[in-house]
Length: 308
Image (cartoon, rainbow, N blue to C red; front, side, top):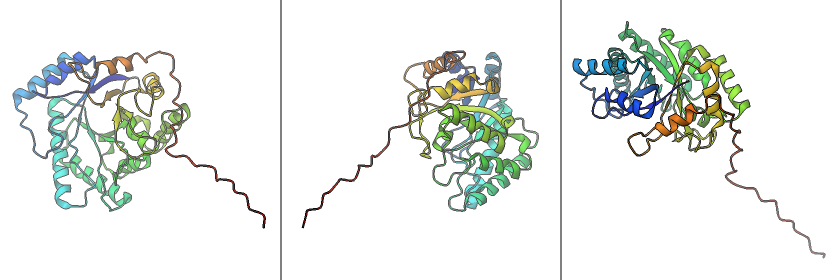
C-alpha cells in the first residue's frame, strides 16, 4: 500500500506537498476548498501552476481531494440538492485542472425518504454531474459511511446499487474507510471478519472498483454507526487489521491515507506513517480481544420459601 495522510493546505494548495515530505508520505489527500462552506475558491492560473509543479517535484505521488461535507446528493430539499450538484461539479472541474486523480465523496443522507429512494436520488444526481463534467479527468470515489442517521452507503449492497443505477459508473470507484466499515458492523479487526468483509465487498461492489483507503482506527465499538476516528493502534480496531491491509498483495499499489487527528508539531502524521510502513513484512500482531461488555447481567438471587 502507498501510505500517506490528509495534509493541510493552509497558506496555499501547493504547500501540502512540503508537509507530505516532512511526514514521509507517498500519497496525500487534501481539501481544495473550505470543507464546511458552499463558497467556491479562487484558484488562479498561478496557483494551478504552483500546485502542478509541486506535484511533479513529489514524483507525482497519488493525490485525492475530499469533497465538501455539505454535499448531499440524496437531499430531499430541492435547493440543497441543486447546491450539492453544483458544488460537486466544481470539485471535479477543479481537481481535473489541478491534476488530482480522485474526488472522494460521501453520497449523502436521505433524511427520511428511505434507503432505496435515497440511493436512487444519489444515482440520478451523479448522472447529472457526470453529464456536466464530460471529459474531466478526475474520478469520483464513493466513500463507505459509518451509517450515522440516514446516511446511505454504509452497507456494501447500497454502494453496489449506486453503481448499478449510475449510467457512467466507469467514471467512479470506491474509497474504503476502515473506521466507517467497523462502525457500520463489518468486523475487520479479526482474520475471519477481514476475509468475510472483502468477500462481501467483492460480491456487492467488486474489488476492481477499490481505488483508495482511509486508514483510521475507531473510537467507537463495532456496529456503533458513529463516525469517530482514532489514532492507529489506539482504538477498538487494533493493529492486526492494518497489518493485513499493508501486507495484502491485492492492495499493494493502492493509496491509503490517514485521517486521524494531527499530532502537535511540524510533523503531525510522521509517527503514524512510520508505524504503518514498519508493518510491511513484520510479524502479524494478535487480533484484539473482544470488547468489554457495556453492561452485566446479574444472576437472579435465590430465595427460600418459609415453611408455613
